[in-house]
Length: 412
Ligand SMILES: Cc1cc2nc3c(=O)[nH]c(=O)nc-3n(C[C@H](O)[C@H](O)[C@H](O)COP(=O)(O)OP(=O)(O)OC[C@H]3O[C@@H](n4cnc5c(N)ncnc54)[C@H](O)[C@@H]3O)c2cc1C
Image (cartoon, rainbow, N blue to C red; front, top):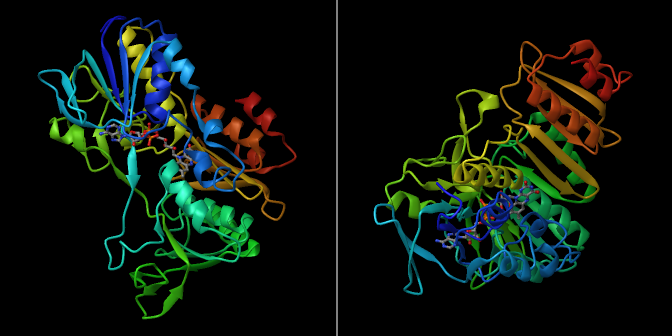
């Protein structure tokens, strides 16, 4: 590739928006076109379930960069525009306004959309999802003091919305199919802590329930469960995971798996000159061996963008990052470094009662695989360092709160 290559980026979200910056910072001088189907400048999605939902952030404050920035660094920004087709051989993309744009390099950053539940009543008014600003506005309008909000799904989005709904004076009832919340994304002790914490704040959590339909004439008034009972509600948020926007890639014959568009460590797809970044990619993570992962997080989208910029510019790649994620609920700041699965043993530092603790995930040889930290940013940072270093820790010292985490990091 070269510093003057014509770059087209599909998807003006977190990955696409940041990639423009990464490319210009790396010295790219050629034309860059950023195409997004939403009417908004690239923005931060995490506040949609948190500060923005609670009315503590504005649309302007969510923007990654102001409009002038994109003009200043000469990005051809096409908002409210959908890419309808990618032709990998002719090296063009077709837009819904009839334009056909040639590219030397194409970056797919189309993310995902909220998964719908294919059950009767799913089209009723008052059934809400959360992926973009328009969704968040609809939830804000529905979640008024005293209203009953049913939340289907006990993952991070469901829990964050539950916490925001409590702050707004609403009454959330959370329905989870599995026998615990956060079943796919957190270890059992962490999930148990969040379960208890939410209940204490007033969230009605029901696990192990299967919902069979939404009930209501025009608007949802309840959710029918498998046992025939009905949970009454004024609105229902469905937070049951994401569905990838990988249609363009599949149609273009780019290699895809169920987990996403298959990419290498530098986000290159099976077609030369075409990359895929962010939520839609199915990527390796050298720190975790040969396995492939789909990471739905802001740091992941940013890291892949940086690697794409370096690859296009022929610059040395930055070191591989330890994956990380965060979630804010009430006064709890959860930070996760690494992938919290397949651990051999857990070591807890701190106190669940004081809502200040870190759960360390270790391999059988006591290598740090992941850390889930609540209100303990120092432990989270230490975890990132130790995971990245791939070194073994002394189990006795780690389990001893009298030994500071800084000393443990220093020792390895
Ligand atoms: C409510 C919510 C809370 C979150 N909280 C956190 C958090 O606390 N921490 C964290 O790390 N992550 C969080 N995330 C996840 C994080 O926001 C995503 O991982 C990140 O936005 C992924 O970036 P992306 O560029 O892959 O996709 P996106 O940011 O989703 O951008 C994709 C864009 O492409 C557009 N698009 C799709 N198809 C086309 C097309 N054919 N033509 C043109 N445009 C198209 C989409 O409309 C979208 O604007 C949260 C997400 C949500 C929804």
